[in-house]
Length: 132
Image (cartoon, rainbow, N blue to C red; front, side, top):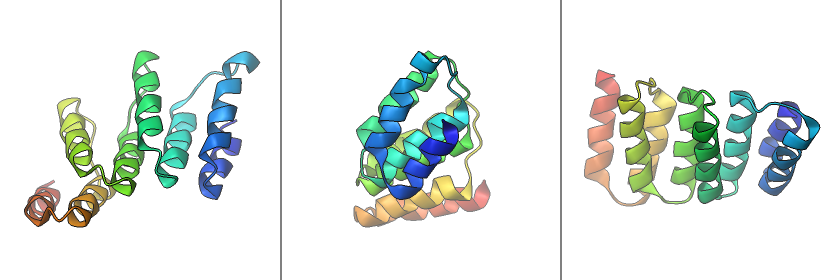
């Protein structure tokens, strides 16, 4: 299922990724971080940031490991949809739960701030990235 969901992500087919995701429990297949990451990325590429956040919530509820790649996918989904404030919230949340942020995390947040005309925030993030 992870490979099929990844293919949906690459093809921008978030609805198919959701469908596959829904079939997994019926097939007695356990969810994995990789599967969630691919589904979150698929949602993000189609501007479905709310769906990406729902998947993140499901991960938390099921105690599935949240990692840097997971948050990069969520931050990118928010960035694609112009949710610049959420990108900042997720960077802060990563620090709170001690998940390491990466250049990808910061770059997506910086891009989001840039698109929103929040240049001061973008500069702050650039400085934080350099110190990270």
